[in-house]
Length: 369
Image: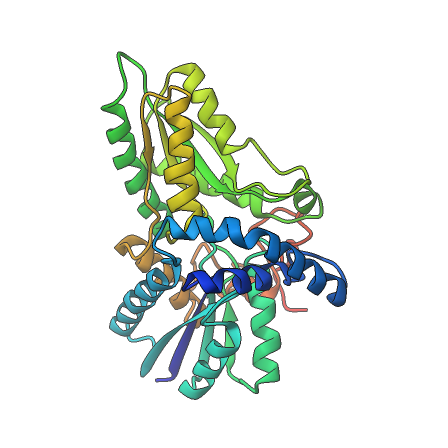
């Protein structure tokens, strides 16, 4: 049996208040975030990170001076290692973390994987919905860094999994529990409204062909179907808007205000985050919680992220297993032509429809080029 390395990708987070400014600099120096020439982007990143650091420090002070994201990702890695080992997917399984903007950075992860000497590597972003600014940025950095640092191994990439069964099941269970809690705060025949909240993107990103919004909507619809509640009142909305550009909507804060006007409790579901961080613990819990109270929302319940819940970890393990030993008839695999039985991301097919030009795969392709 071969040695299997799985790399989990996420954005990372400051591990101290002193790390906030360099974390922000790395974020804004990413060409997927600011698409300017390198010297201009570097100057802009210095300027923006310097201006935003005091505000961001104040945010992190509210959650203990550091992001919990890396620790929670390590818990996911440990759980996934145990599950993959039990499935005997390799003589030895190693699960590694590659954070985009703070330690452990991609170069650190590449060196760790290289030292592990794997026969097979599976790249697995912890972004269920693909965006060029998240999964795309992380995977591009991995490819460049692995080549530069001499890591050579058979590599498979999972680009997205917006409707993966384990992920959807885990979130549906959490949402159902939140719905029950919010229902207890309702009066009369009023039922809670479910707000599926995801990090927003500028509209121009979607217009350029980023499939993120469409995949977020797929996730929400899959959760609603899995919950099986008749006549559920739900909406997809977007948070964390910054800067002068027009962003996709509706905004989460606007939907909270609408719920206050309508007199309905809300259940807020972070469906694009799989770990807690400042955008859940501060923006959703504190800022939006205070907004809901001020607008007269009769009940505000925020659903936890999936973290290391069993169904989600099993779903990640399924993705890895399909990558390293695909089975015929798997609905996530190519079902026709010479590529039958292989993951679509290996042969250039996609789950997105053909209008999303920034999806990393060629539309409707079922054979190797």
